[in-house]
Amino acid sequence: MPVEDPPGLSFRQAKDAFFAALLNRRLSLSARAAGVPSRCHVARTVQTEIGNLISSLEDLEDDLNDIQREIKQAQNSVLQLKSAALMSLQPIGMLPPEIIRKIVVHTVDGPCDHRRILRLSQVSKLWRETVLGISALFTTADWESWPAQLVDTWCLRAGRHLLKIYVGDSLVTRMDCGSRYPYRALLERFSTQVGELEVSCYKTSPAEIFDFQMPSLQTLYIANDDGVCIELQNLPILRVLTLASGGLGIPTPLTSVTHFHYHASLLMPPTHLISQLPCLQHLAITVAYPCGPGGGSERRIVLPSLISLEIQWISPPHASTVQVLLGVYSFPKLQTIVLHNHYNNAEIQTIIRSLVCEPKARNLHCALTSE
Image (cartoon, rainbow, N blue to C red; front, side, top):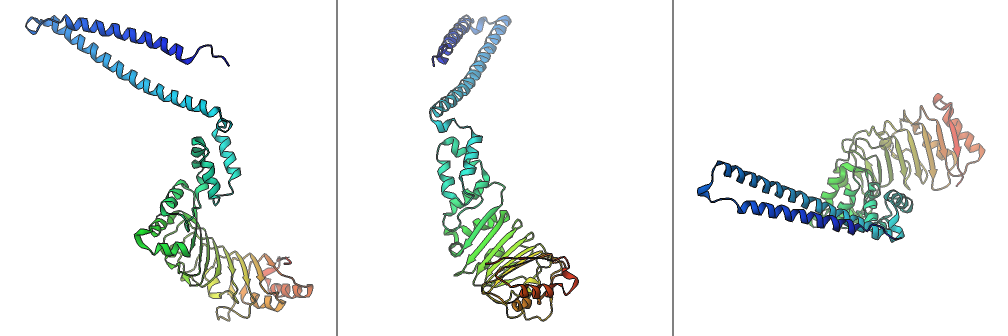
């Protein structure tokens, strides 16, 4: 497309006029300076003339400084326009940031899709700035494999978003290696920003992880061979707790926990553990088959806030096994019970009678799944 007024033509014309005016002003000031008499002949009027000359020179100096600043700004604008013009030659460079953002969000398969996040950030400078500006993509660093510096940078890019951290044997081992691998200090620094924590350790003890203050932690998953202990003061707003294997100690009641998932190939979930969750509303249990109370207590454990119960056995159960489990607890407000596996009608009737024999479940809804 022809350009009628090239940008350089008007600029060069203005530049020539500017330098001509600047030269004339400099010659005028030089002439005035040359006509200044010697000190011995200076009178009051001459002193005034010299003062005016100095003032004019200072004004000229200020004007030149202003011009230099404006020239610098003009140079930056020209560079930006040039960069934009070059980018416009490439189809990908014509996309505005808001479109790039939508492409990234729909392309990336969540914060765990590290490889794709990195690839999209390397398309161009504009794409990098756009990707780095989506802070929600940086909530899940690979603490198990990445060097500490990369983990640090990644988590910082998450901004105010809560972090999801996976702790395995590798990370626990490196945390014990001292200053050479500063993962312990790194985890402690970000502990107040952790919203979801998964601890799966089968060769090492993750006990020290729970010494950190995690005031934002809402979801906790634990699977380890050694027992760990969690304190309410370190996890004040913990809401969802999952125990997949191993022991768990709860010295003081966790009043914030409303969801408890017990998935272990053990017998009965320990009654002393569930009794430390007084505000529990949703309980899901997956075990091999119950043979009796796991806590050694013959008294029923009252779950005053429980409204839903989900039960599944690894081995096909009989109605009597369900009754054993239900006989350990009392559910005054139970509204829904979900029974996995297969039961015949007679077994279902037996289970329902064991629940409605008290006024605790008059409006009980029973859902069955066949697996």
